[in-house]
Image (tube, rainbow, N blue to C red; front, side, top):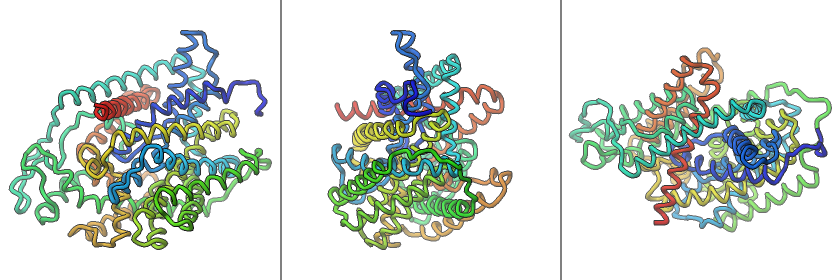
Amino acid sequence: MTDAAPRPELTLRAVLTGMLIGALLTPCNVYSGLKIGWSFNMSIAAGLMGFGLWRLGEWAVGSAPWSIYENNINQTAASSAASIISGGLVAPIPALAMLTGQILPWPLLVVWVFVVSMLGVVVAAGLRNQMLLRERLRFPAGVATAETIREIQAHGKEAARRLRVLAGGAVASGALKLLDAAATLPRLALPIGALKAGAVPSVTAANLGFVLDPSLLMLGFGAIIGLRAGLSLLVGAVAAWGVLAPVILAQGWAQTGPADPGASWFASLVEWLLWPGVTMMVVSALTAFALSLLRLSWRRRTRVADPAPPTLSRRVFFTALIATLAMASAAQVGLFGIGPWEAVLAVLLSFVLAVVAARVSGETGITPIGAMGKITQLTYSIVTPGNVTANLMSANVTGGAAGQCADLLHDLRTGEIIGATPRFQVVAQCFGVLTGSLVGSLVYLLLIPHPQTMLITPEWPAPAVAVWEAVAEVLAQGLQAVPPGAVPAMAIAAVLGFALALAERLLPHYVTRFLPSAPAMGLAFVIPAWNSLSLFLGAAGAAAVARAAPDWTQRRLMALAAGLVAGESLVGVALAAYSMLG
């Protein structure tokens, strides 16, 4: 199909619908990113919401039929907006605030997030033919989105049922969050007897975080991540909070919290536990990334005989490339005082790493943003040793570019399957990035006005912030930043992370599916144990439902899980905004 085909595609309502839905979904990823350090691709949710909105419009006011190509533009814009957290809002930006106290005002934060994200859009536009048409990388999220929007466009009743399930989950999750805010609901401690830890007379299950948290959002996330990740989180939580925490209290390596059997000691214990947890996540991620590169370098590339014309003309592409390089470099210099040559190096390195991250994402569906950022941090520990700001914000450039590059390539795969126009999707992506920058920056500042006192707490565990902050501290100060007794634990965690990542890549699937996930285990060290318990329960519940009702699970479970996540996220953001205004 050509650009001149008589069909509605890049229409005003498609772009505005994507921006509106993106503005609604962006707070969900910001909220969950600060809660558990994870975000999710919102393409399918956006496709369902856009379809439902305009089917309602057809019924209510007789609007024109909503085409599959308009829905593709809608999901492209909406998913890019929701992916804006890769621009640093839940990791390097708050980590910088915690280490240096620097907080960008909203207009400057919008500019920064927009600029670093646009790097990825330009790179993706240049990679489309190579990765999608010549190498035929799968980009699985794009395939799933294409299948979903084709199905709902063809079967309206099924789409309506899914939307009702999603809405029901959102109402239930949001209502429970409102009830908890109005009258704090009880956290039921697990029936674990109190124990003595050295000079500490009594440590309860509640002190260690082994309580049931009334959060449907966590159950929804658990259903999405699957049983293996849920079990890995449970194993990690037991190892960290059930085994290591009493040991470090007994050794005096961590301080107790309030002298109350029902109080949480998360804030004091996590300052020690994050070190082995961070180590396991970083080592496993970098190992898996390195092995992916080796595998990709050995893989035989398949090429098509006559590739499609470039997504953007050569003139437009190189103009955009130079413009984004200049803007990203100027933003680093102007906002953070990074040297001009160091700023240019960060952008050039980010271009290269965005290409690598996109290739890995095309193979696996997982974009290694964290691993890319760590490579940049390690590089800048040599280029500008001791400069925490340069270390974090240069890596922020890499993360923003990698995240948006992979997101657009997944969307372009969707478009390629249904026969959409790729350059129209690039335009939609730009509008989505603008929306996400405006809304995501505002939501972050409303939620976390005081990062140094609010983050890495029971309310806002912010595990991604803890990872980036810890790495920056170590690279700036060496091992002086590590608390007593943590170095041997870090060494063990590094060996375990390396071994599990190596085994996952080299052993057959029937073996690896029984191995724990090292990133999930490491994450359990830096989030409260009750979060890991809820995620496990959600994953276990989803697995049980899948076994009992496989057809219902295939058609409805992800819609229900997405509703549980969206409801609590949106209500949480609204409550935070209300408290700020009050």
